[in-house]
Length: 105
Image (tube, helix red, strand yellow):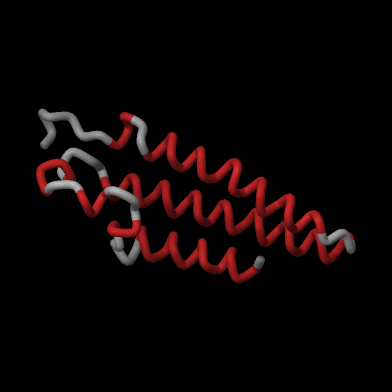
């Protein structure tokens, strides 16, 4: 589980600071004119924050499971991170907040 948490941290860093926007599904297939309609920096920030949050939940679940000697907590934390993180990421990153107005383009 720690490896999954590290993977999420690395993905968050690569998307936000490495500007590897091609890791965002569908963004790399957009035409240049369509890409300019989106605030990709803002979307990348959301991706970073969600990836870090999911990594935190997974890591916390891992350590709580070790401390409480109840290994199922680790699984619960993983699935809670997935069930909260993925829908939040999809809803927020596709919101109108990250669409640029035609006047600002």
